[in-house]
Length: 119
Image (cartoon, rainbow, N blue to C red; front, side, top):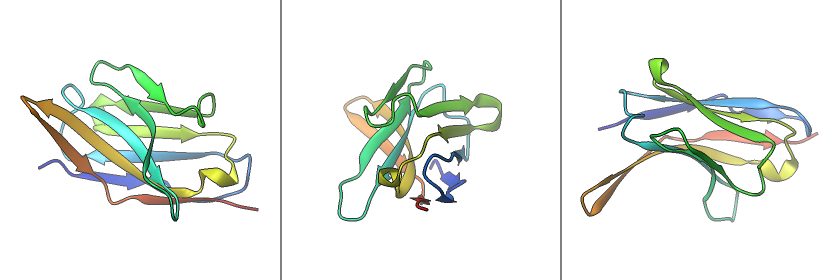
């Protein structure tokens, strides 16, 4: 079973930056799509950024131009660089790994890391 461990969250002022990391327990990037989701209090979990096994990236409109998803295959780690942070970016951020197998989709989640944007 794939294990994902996030790190890098914290408290930052508006306009600041943070980089989140998600370390996978094994080399999965060639077969899994990776994503960063977030969930704010009272809201549904939403996709923030994703990177396919082929390296294609996609972003939520609310973070385009501010956030960048990347991965280091040698370190089995996915990153989310967050710049120009806003208070509305405050949420618990989760790393996700997803793979389609026949008619089933496998999902793995990390435990989440809190990001708080406040002055």
